[in-house]
Image (cartoon, rainbow, N blue to C red; front, side):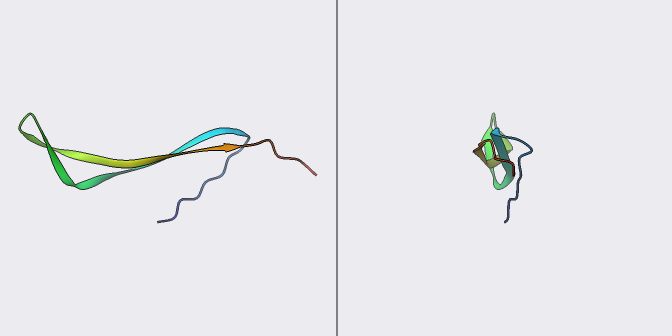
Amino acid sequence: GVFTYAAPRSGWWGFAALNTSDEKMKHEGQDKDVEIGAVLWVQFMEWKEK
């Protein structure tokens, strides 16, 4: 897939992508959903204006 982002100002920004796996995991005898995901941290520096 494509992940597009933009930052309104400088600083650290975190972006998360989460989804549910097709597989289940047992917890206390019950099937539970398994969440899969990733976090992307990016730092935008001050930009110069013309």
